[in-house]
Image 1 (cartoon, rainbow, N blue to C red):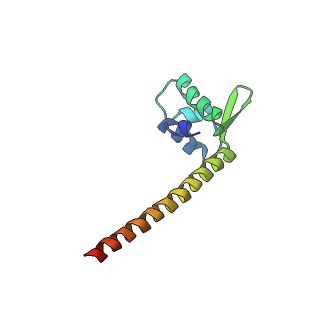
Image 2 (cartoon, one colour; image 1 turned 45 degrees about the horizontal axis):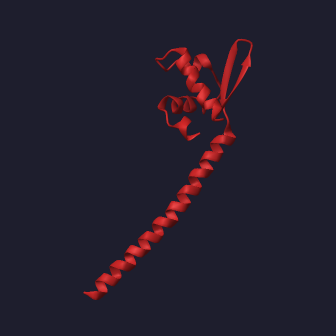
Image 3 (cartoon, rainbow, N blue to C red; image 1 turned 135 degrees about the vertical axis):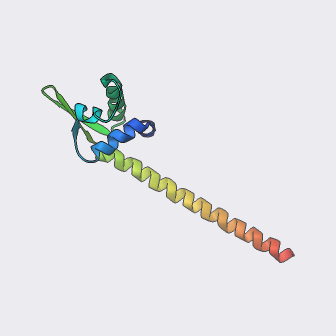
Length: 105
């Protein structure tokens, strides 16, 4: 998932899909790239389960997959909580060291 999010084109596609489902043609409009290149980006997003496609006749429509986005969000929240705790511990330690240093002078 994070590999898929690492590319600005794919992030733009996800931004567009946050407004609702879109066809390949609609997704291709803002980009100056060949359709096969766009399809590669869509493939990466689909392989990472960030989007899902459905084909009706000749029209392929993509939409966001909420569960995967939620899992990524949950991971970020856990990491932030962990690092906030670690940084708070470091801050406390440094304040303690500073107080000890000031007490010696």
